[in-house]
Image: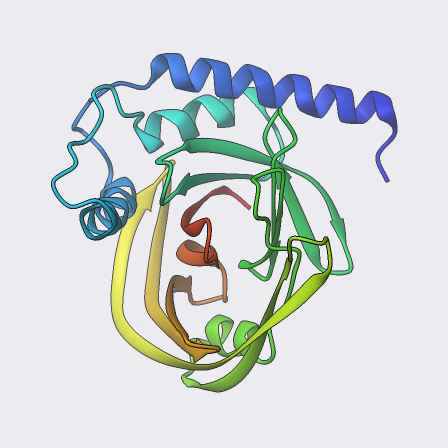
Length: 234
């Protein structure tokens, strides 16, 4: 665990870069391809969830937010955008435990990743409490197709953790190269389609040759939908 003083320093740095990033963000259209991919994902989802709804003026630019984050925080950083709310924010890593990396906002909303795959959230409401990945991480990181079973867990109305098992098929898609936050990525798109308990969901990952997930579009749960996650600094 980090000492309290260290945690205060992390939160202060996160608050500084996010405040700067939000102020600096505008409607500049000179985005890198990495930003355009993520924004395209968000637009596609928005058009399906709320057809005809117009984009809000002054929507932040992920590239500018990432640049502000890098200048103010020295640790690993991701940029995340929530599908249903449109919230775009930067998160900094505060710790690692048994292979799980925890990224937080200054208000201590958290996203937890294992090998780039989403395994939990906190502070978002209707949180994903935990996830069993099966062989998904190995298949996605190895850019290899295959099948596996995964389990998502959520709290019910009585505070009891309930499992949501699904059978998943992972397939290899096209190669894609893009730049984001000053980093060039040569990736292969890996698609994951899962079904079970009357639900069908999909995830997409853009994976580099060394198994790093540079960009992903991952399902949190029935209430929160998907989140798009871009790697800024690993």
